[in-house]
Length: 152
Image (cartoon, rainbow, N blue to C red; front, side, top):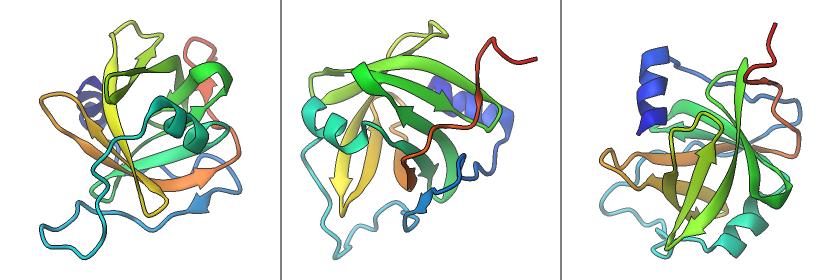
């Protein structure tokens, strides 16, 4: 929820792939009620999520609008960026069926359920907004942003 509010406040319309070599994934939109595409119903476990994401940088979209990018580092560490300028450091862990993220901003956990749908991730926020994000780009390269507090 806080990330959603921050995104709206910043008025971000796009987040281009942060790095060279980003692989474009077909843009996902919210699935229609009677779609032929298989919708995953079981959230990924921590082991499945780590196997999918570790060592990658994934860019997410919300109904075709760029939302942000996250780099998945060793030892469940992450680096999140809403834009190309500033990153937040944090870590992830499993809590029940959800994967929760805590960042250095101290705002507490943000929990999501992740689903692998056709080789792409769909993430559903565990909160009032119920925001759904879709993997838009995948890269093996790091984010090209500066961690918070290190800017000039």
